[in-house]
Length: 231
Image (cartoon, rainbow, N blue to C red; front, side):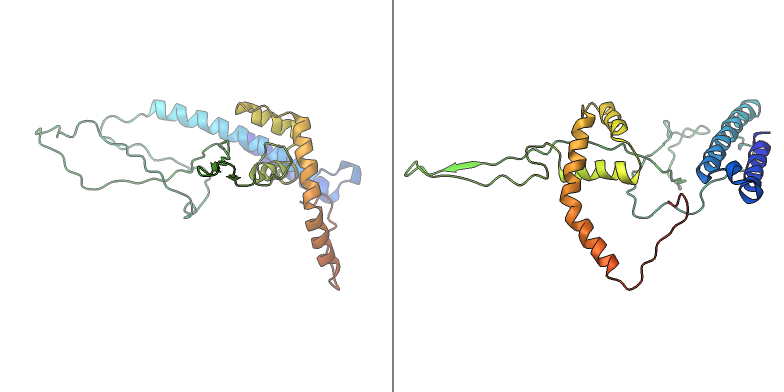
């Protein structure tokens, strides 16, 4: 029934967008969000049905599991080759034969790949600047100059500031939400601090923006997408 409701909603949305009045037309984001909610409901119901089916038709020892009547929708194709592989061996505990007690030897293996996720890891960049003195005259003290920081006196590295900018402008995450994300990792960063970082980073990036704008406008023809809600 949820699948039927999802299809009916999509059909009604398409009809309103195609034939309805301007005030009755649905935004693309509204249609996508409703479709996602319904697809999640379908997946939740399917998981419950599959769990109940496994409990009723649980095979006995040595009996192959029953085949599914309809396989769920999955992404096709192998996982990207550039991703690192971490091996996990799931082995039997007893390597003695259950029939004769002899030692079992390996004759092959089955492999399956699953896409995993490692949460982002914060770290502290410890900058050490050794000082050197002369034992002869005891007057000269030599030390390397401190490296420049993207924000004078700030504790954020270039990578962290870039992540905050991408989250704000690329992923549409307000700074208040980013502050909450940092707090879950035990890092207290006030929203005003993030605002200061973004503002100073924008000042640093202003020359790059001006260069890109002048390069685009120097072309005899400029293409722009004026579609409503583009992107």
